[in-house]
Amino acid sequence: MTTTTKNQKHIAIIGGGPGGLTLALILQQHGIPTVIYEREMADKSHERGGSLDIHEDSGQQALKEAGLYEAFQKVARYEGEDFRLFDKTGKCFIDEVADEDAPGGRPEIDRGVLCELLLSKLDSAIIRYGYKLNKAVSLANGMTELHFENGFVDTAHLVVGADGAFSRVRPLLSDTDVSYSGLTMFELNVVDAANRHPDLAAFNRRGKVFALDDHKGILGQLNGDGRIKVYASLKVDREWLDTIGIGSENPQDAKAKLLELFQDWDESLKNYIRYAAEVVLPRRIYMLPIGFKWNRNPGVTLIGDAAHVMSPFAGEGVNLAMQDAMELALAIIRHDDQAKAIEEYEEKMYEYASEKARESNDNLTLCFSDDAAPNLTELMNSYHEQYNEA
Image 1 (spheres, rainbow, N blue to C red):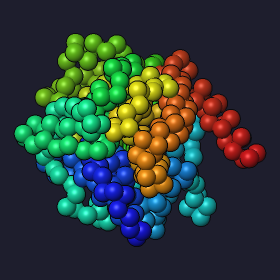
Image 2: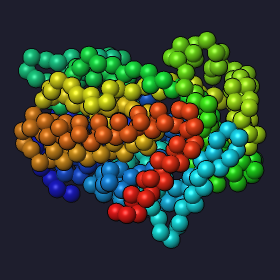
Image 3: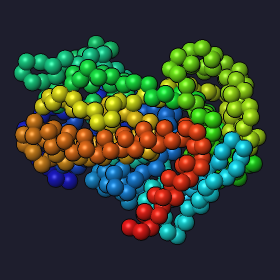
Image 4: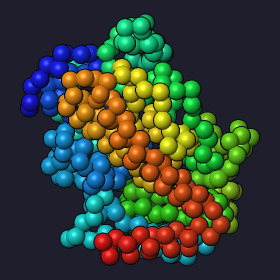
């Protein structure tokens, strides 16, 4: 570990997800202290999201900087790169089986396991659970005052908003807010699929299944704990969710209504809904404008979804958050001038994040357009040809 005082400025990170944890850990590696304020009373990573594919050029690079790459390799699931693509009739367009002897660059890891890795090396004393930020106020001296719901007030030289799509830090930098992407998803879980539902486990295999048609999708994703995380997805107006009567209060009724929405889909695909446990979580998918930038403040910046929330259809969410954390940490380490560090990080981040946001939006549009399965097949075949030529 390299040790440096960096004038011991007070750095406050709002949000204890993968981005915030990665930032704190890389800075800790260089002797730069931080404090993380997390709204939940304890780490909830196992309850949120599913399996994540960690990319070679972003998430894995951040893990190397954090000193966790070897530990990650021990738990990463390269077999999780299996991918199958269907239309609603059950016609298979893509059937990829990962080669475990020649693994690709996007192994899978469950979100909870990733956060456990990061927490295993992070000084637990820096994380304060149960601190929900109410508001952040810019002070005349360039510092930022943080007001928490529990009554605590802190003042920091640098505040990093790692607090997601509905960031309480972002309003310090911009009036721009997230907008509805046009996609609504219902998250379900088929628990212990191999033992309880071997037919679906065999159908899904070791990775992801996409079934796309009629501006809808059923997406299945095997997690490391044996569950299949399911996302029943529809391209609908924002208000539709308020009128359809599908909520988390009555899961049996919610599943019945979802099966009605997919009534003319193949039975093997409807099993993803039919076999799901009694919890249905409805979610609208939000996004920030592609190429979003904010007014620079040398004492405040954003990483992850707070900076560039996008749809999940580029597989970039956690990878970008960790890349942001790495780039910001390295800029802070390089520069004694905090303003210079923020400027360097933001300019670099704007460039790569806008490219991924565009890709994500294009993929969302394609996946929920007419003839989605054959069109996605054509796109992926084109990608593989370019990759092989390179």
